[in-house]
Amino acid sequence: MAEFFTALLDMRFLQLSALMTLLAGIACGVVGTYVVTRRITYIAGAIAHCVLGGMGIHRYVQVVNGWEQSRPITGAVIAALIAAAVIGLVTLKARQREDTVIGAVWAIGMAIGVLFIAKTPGYQTDLMSYLFGNILLISASELQLVAILDVMVIAMVAMFYKQFQAVCFDEEFARLRGVRVELFYLLLLGITALAVVLLVYVVGIVMVIALLTLPAAIAGMFAHKLWHTMLGAALLAVLFSFGGLAISYQPDLPPGATTIVLAGTTYIVVAILTTRKHTPA
Image (tube, rainbow, N blue to C red):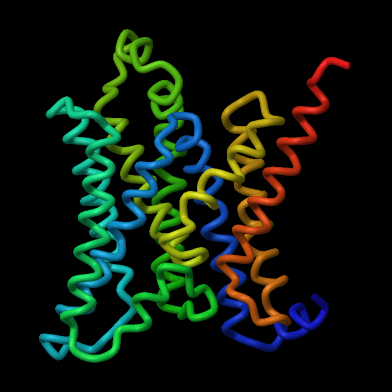
């Protein structure tokens, strides 16, 4: 661990990675609280897997047209927002079962990504690395875009905190109070999509659900107000992400997987301890 902190002072890529854990962790804690409260965990999973489709299309268009290649965050954001809109609108307007819609979007998004990656000239191993995260490869330009997304997420939550809270806890009561439930449900899916894109860089597409939900679930065991849960979840998400980065450095382990093992182990231990505490003797 000491070796990591020594390297952190000198190595630019580690400094960028550490900043990424901070930015992604804040958005993760805030949005993850809504995701856990509203019980839309699998919507986040479907959006995450659609991100690969957006990245694949982005890279395909770049290569085929001979454009200068860049990190495919633009394609990721577009795909995530489209997936969120499709799931939300089909669920609300077509009155289809939410789990069926999620399953369809999940599979289609992933399949589109695989197809475009397969048809893109050249070896596209860097795109497949997004399945398990590539935080050590974050660039300064990507970090700037991530910071913008982070600000957008926090701003949306700050402006519509009460509306999102109402939609998460009691839709019918929210309607009676004049809240446009459908609109704010779609906005909630939108900020979830942006948070998913941030976390893809930290832990990858496959493990996004875990980092989005585990910090909020742990914080929720101790907090009694929604904003308390958000603060706790954000702090935990940052600690898990940074801890995973630090622990994985010396033994050269994948940072994303290390982060999830750390978060998952903490959740299980806390869940067991709190269960025992509340179990009658």
